[in-house]
Image (cartoon, rainbow, N blue to C red; front, side, top):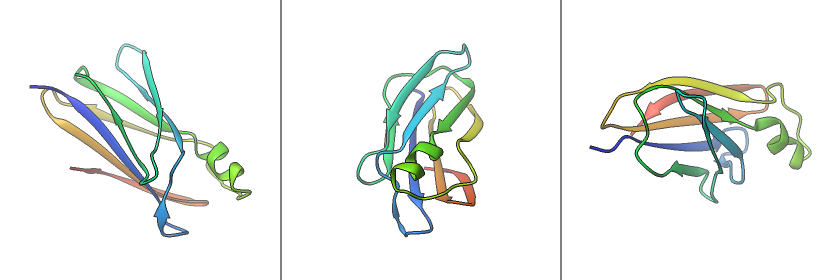
Length: 105
């Protein structure tokens, strides 16, 4: 079975997807895979990923700055454990001064 990853970022303050937000997935061995959210606020890392602890880092500071909006969080980093053979979906609900995350499907 393949181990996969996706994310979905929503701008909770404006009630719309956070499109064009840069992100980096750091794998257990320290290598990284980078991307950006699409028009629907979604991104996917293709390929079979290793099991273990990963960190997804969202570049929230530059994303808010590009919209001339302030934020308290220049980055949001979420560390989670991938299990071999499962799909892992980390959702992020984002606003300038708060965020929440959860494992979706």
